[in-house]
Structure formats: C-alpha cells, structure tokens
Length: 241
Image 1: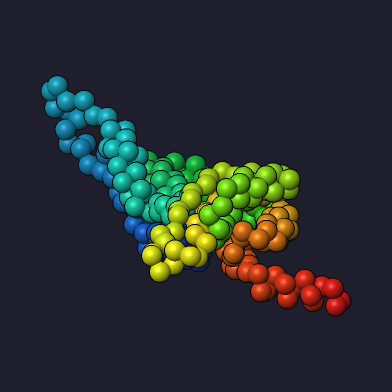
Image 2 (image 1 turned 180 degrees about the horizontal axis):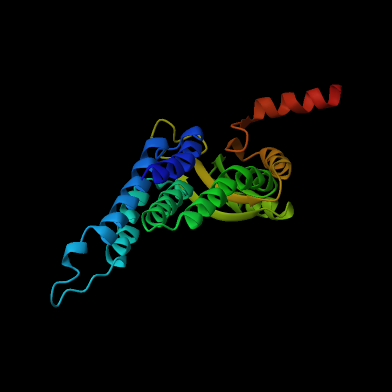
C-alpha cells in the first residue's frame, strides 16, 4: 500500500505541478484505493474458500475498479467550445488505478515500469508535443464585418490562398435598431482554423484586415486584436524601418 501511494504520488505530482484539477493527493488516493481493493479481492475472502458452492474470483473486484474509475476521470474533462481539456489527467487517473491493482496483486515490476513510462510520457513527450503543436495547431478567430454580400466568401478564399483550413464557422447578425437604421449593419464571424504556422495565419489576417468590410479581428494565437488603426500604424512603422 505504501508502494502504491508512492507510485501514484509521482504521477500526481506532475499533474499538480502542471496546475491540473486532479493532482497529487487525488492520484495517491486512487492508486491506494485500487491497491486496497485488489488486496481485499485476493485475501479478504480466504475464509470462504473451503465453503461448498463458493467460487473465488480475485479479478472480479478489479474489473469493477477499471469500469468505475471512469466516473472520476470524466469529472476531470472540461469542454470549452471546440477545446477539450483534462483528457490527459483523466487518462492518468485511469492508469494510476491500474498501477494500484498491479501493486495489490504483487506485480511490482509491472507497476514500477508502468509508472516510469507514464512519467516519461508526461514530462518528455509533453515538451515534444508543444514543439510540434507550434508548427500545426488550431486557432480561434473572431471577426466583426459589415453585413454585405460576398464578404464571407472573400474571407474564406483568402484563408485558402494561405493553405489554412476552416474547421468550424459560426455567424451572428447584429440587431439594428431604428435609430441605427442608417448605419451599415454588421455581423460577427467566428472561425476555428487549422494553420501550418502562426506567422502564416497572421499574414492572412493582415490581408483580410485590409478589406473595407472588415472592422476588427480578435485571435487566440497571441491574444491580439487587429483593428484599422493599429494595422495602419504597424504598416507605417515597417515603412519607416
């Protein structure tokens, strides 16, 4: 049980260090609980072995742990629009439960090897994944454009020119009151794009911002908001340099 607490704590420490909801103590409890249930399944019913018509199955309680731990893992998964967070933490909880079952069954080598591989996956592969994600990742873009015919198709074709794929698109028309009837109606365009590079997507947005019908652009890449004013000032600085 102490070994289960140590192995689960090692994985939980990484989750705690990365500021995730299920952290150090949660992983210790899951691993320790799984080991305890496995010990109960093996040794807790030994007095009934010699009873008539009684069949002992040590794997029965372990199977319930594997299926039941999904409820705890589901609580760590959060969905925000097109972004899903917590999948790695939920998977680590499930793996920690498996490690606890291995320790409880006396399969120490398998438990230790699994812990080492999980730690390599969380520490080493996480850094590699971030480097790879910078080259190709999804971005959320929100535009305020004038409600004119052909504007949306022109924006989408501009993204295609830069080899940027549109994965999701939503349009919301702004309500125009009687006082603002003389003002050109506008609409909000929300896009989720898959760009090969951040710089490529930014160049595409700068060209889209040049369109007369585009009023402002907000991106999730650098937390920036592009408007006519700061775009003109940026162009003036580049011409001065």
